[in-house]
Length: 147
Image (cartoon, rainbow, N blue to C red; front, side):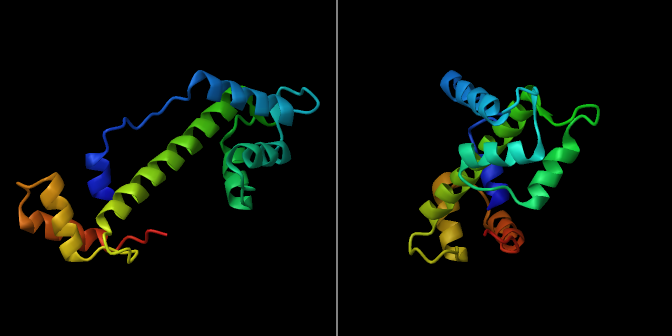
């Protein structure tokens, strides 16, 4: 399914925030940078993610973000923060798109696609695609864990 979605997705891989959304991200950064340090500490970053995405980042996510910032700074600068948030939002939108496509093909609400579901879906979106290719995609994608 991931292979199918990446080929069928019409939206470009990079997504840009609207001006009001961008402004909100800057406001969250400033609110979380309590001492006006010009950067977010690890704890500041966690609070910002809660404010924007509604969940507390795991230790692994926080470690990953903190290890990706410039080692010459004491934390996440505004430009880095905006890039991180944009990527998280883009990933969230992509996951929602994949879920929406999957749900459209899962006509019996089972939480999985049978080969017949898969064939019907491809018949609608790519009627000239050979059955051999559909079988190859189905068998390789059935190994993917969706949750």
